Each structure stands twice: as C-alpha cells, then as structure tokens.
Image 1 (cartoon, rainbow, N blue to C red):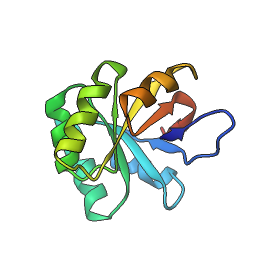
Image 2: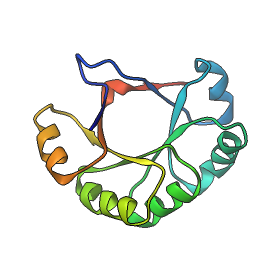
Image 3: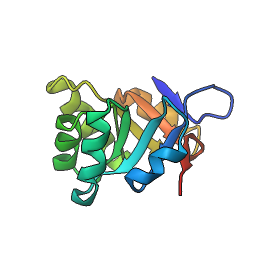
Image 4: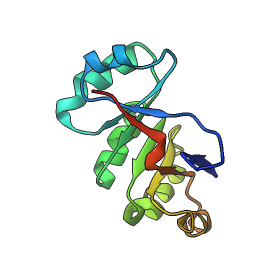
Amino acid sequence: MLLFGHRFIESIKFYHIFDIEDIKNTPSSSTLYLEYSEENLDIIKHLQKNTVPFVLSIKNITELVYASALGASYIAVSKKLAKTAQNIAENYLFDAKVLTHIEEEDEIEELALLGVDGVIFAQAIVKIS
C-alpha cells in the first residue's frame, strides 16, 4: 500500500495547481495534483504533452474512467468510492494507482482490507497559487 503524507513515512509531495501558470512555481520533476473538470482539460493536455505525472481528484465513476483515459498517474477518490474505484481499476487494468483521501491513521487498516492501492493525507498536497 502506498502512503503519501504520513507523518513518519517519507513520500513525494503533490503540488496542487489551478492553471498552467502555476506549473512554473513547482519544483522540477514534480507530480502535480488537480481536480478533474472539463475546465481543466487544457491543463491536463499540457501535462500529457510534456509527460508530467499528475494526480486527478475525481467525484464519480465516470470521472474515474476519464482520469485513466487521460493518463493520470494517480486517481484520488473519496473513501465512499474507494472499493468500487479499485475494483474498476483492477478489472480494466488501469495504469493509474487509486488513492483515497484520509484524515486519520486508523483509516489505513480499513482501506488496506479493501485492497486500495494507497492513501493520501492532506499533508502530501502543497497548494500552489
């Protein structure tokens, strides 16, 4: 299981961007984080074109499928969608890893038992503005 933002396990940071200009304010070789929306398709296409790894945060199963098709390295889902998203990712052999947003360490066990690829604490996300 992947752990991002855990207090004593070193991991990469995800840089939450809101437009293409924000990319200039991130370290080189960063993994970028953004919300899935049609308004962000220009950013996503820019990331694809420049082979920049990115996380797409999604709200439903349709967006999960889009995130995979758009080449996301990671797909961030709510706890409510975690099991279903993981099953779909495994069934369709997604390249992306499914990450679930959590707040407390005791949520790790529950998600591990569900077979989710990883968890992401808020501390793993650096907002760029």
